[in-house]
Amino acid sequence: MEEGVVNEILQGPLREVFDSAQLLTDVSGSGNNWAVGYLTYGAAYRQSIVDKLRRASEQCDCLQCFFLIHSMGGGTGSGLGTRVLSLLEEEFPDVCRIVTSMYPSVEDDVVTSPYNSVLAMRELTEHADCVLPVENQSLMDIVNNINLMSHGGNPSSVVKRDSTVTSGQGGLSRAEKPFDAMNNIVAKLLLNITSSARFEGSLNMDLNEIAMNMVPFPRLHYLVPSLTPLYTLADVNIPTRRLDQMFSDAFSKDHQLIRANPKHNLYLACALMLRGNVQVSDLRRNIERLRPSLPFVSWNQEGWKTGLCSVPPVGHTHSLLALANNTCVKSTFMELRDRFTKLYKKKAHLHHYLHVDGMEQSFFTEAVSSLNALIEEYHHLDTTKANWTPDAPRLCIA
Image (cartoon, rainbow, N blue to C red; front, side, top):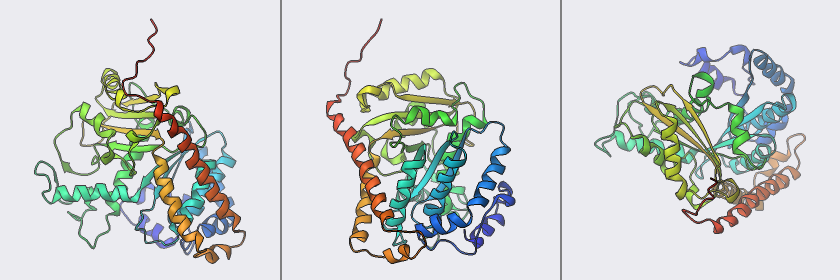
């Protein structure tokens, strides 16, 4: 909602990407307050938002889904972002809603981010079809690894000066915020998801198929994204990864955009979205190779969704995005709940929220109840993992 921030984009290198008539701003942001974003700005700009959504959707020949990209820690992203999500459900109930949510790190400089995140989580659980959680800390770790490479951490891997991953500065200095580098990783995630809609491929995947195939229970729609190679948008000199190695990388913790270990938890489903010169036989062979080491829920052992796009990302022969519906996300949610509870026990900063028209304390209790229920649902599924054994014999039908 900050006019200055949006104007900065309109004067930057991406100004041609945006239709200025579709932008919406106010004088100031939401002051890191979910209630201001959701209730104050949400009410004031409701009709204007709906009008802009209709205008954009009416220009589509085949409206597959809506993407919502927002942060969880501040006030506008969490509050107005989730208000837009509920408006999408009201106005376009049959169109899939895929949300990319940026989760704050523990060292976040917004004191009220646990409140904002938990209040937003309830809306995401109720109104989104799929949520792709991305943690700031994971992005920082990835960028730090690139930085290490650029300073000779690995002789065979070098980041060129002035590459996109280093924000055009030729290396991340301490004074520089590596937001450009972090945003590039998220941009790559979105580019891979939408590649089937933009390019031809032997096995195209509609965006609405992701929710249809990946979400067996409506509330459990949080998909862990992992990318390989991680540096597609960066000008990084690394040897081309073998195809099989790329599949293995996609299931390693270092390539995930949230900090969790899926192999210690249970898979409900998994989507593999490939770009480049990859054959269906390569895909099947690697799934068969990886399957024994991945603990899938007993009633969905064949829960793999695949997409092949023939056009690779710039600078690479192939890339892979894996989206895992895995119970490991509960660790992220539990950490968020703990940080929320520490503040809420002391009733710290609550008055800032309760002074907003329409905001009541019940919003907080209902939000944390929703989060508790979500964690419990994941935990209940996790208890069935005790019955999983690697290389279990599978039923063969002649």
